Every structure is written in C-alpha cells, then in structure tokens.
Image (cartoon, rainbow, N blue to C red; front, side, top):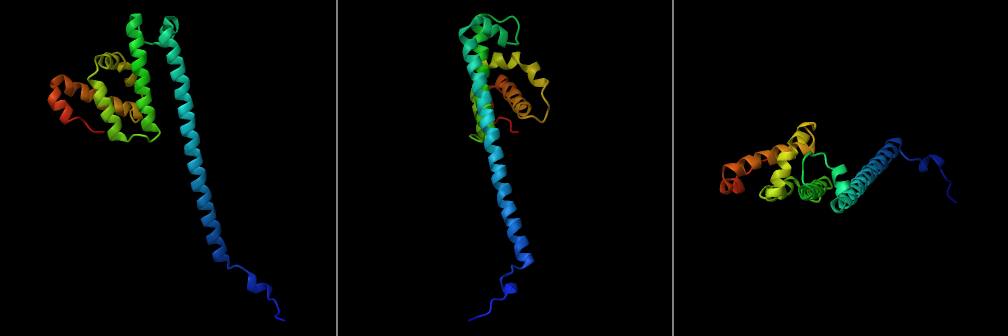
Length: 166
C-alpha cells in the first residue's frame, strides 16, 4: 500500500493565484455584460414609456400641448413635431443599443433631412440642442445634422454625396 503524502496534493501558490485571477476576470466579464444588458433594458423601458406618452399626446390635444415645449404651434403641427421627435428618439435608441453604428445613424438622419416636417422640427429645436453637453451623443449628432442641413440648403446633389462625418 502506498503512503499518501499530503504535500503532494498541494497546489502551487502561483498556480492557485493564476486560477483565481482567471476566475475573477471571467466574473468581471460576466458582470460587465450583465450591467450592459440591464442598462439596455432600462433604456428600452424608458423609450417605451416615452412612446406611450407620445402616443397619448398624439390623440389628445390637451396632452400634446402639455408635452410640447414649443410655443405657438397649431394642433396639427404639434402632432407632427411630436411624431418626428418620437421617430428621432427611436433612431437614437437604436444607436445607443448598438443596433446601428454611427454611419447608419447618420444615414438615417440624412434621409430625414429631406423631410419638410423634420426640417421644421430641427429648426424649432435648435436651442434645445445648444443646451446639451458638447460631448453628448445628441450634441454630436446635432452638429452633423446641422452641417447636413447647411449642405442641403447649398445644393441637394452635392449634399447627398459628400455629407459630414463625426
């Protein structure tokens, strides 16, 4: 019968530290992924709440007036602006969630730039965008769309081909 040596079963401390570090790194990756999933779920829920409120405002003029920060709009124009804002918010959400990249986001905005109602909305909400932190996503998108609007005003053919980048 062989004699068991308790020291023979010991794990090398350096090897044990390596395993612990590997385990901790794996746990950190999982925690980071879970945090991102929760963040995305919260963004989606917030967007859902805003979409529901906008939907109610689109059918109830009193709610539309309460939701809007733009003075002097007709009931019809207020509905259009609220709808455009909801669509713009959905495009931004898609980018925040990683469904579309920067180029796709700007492509969507480029298409919206030719829409007359979007152009009016964009002009009416310029002061809102100026109040945003310069480094925020919405501020960066705003500067690009502002440049696209200027290019569009200068000539549609060149605007479609050239377009600004981030």
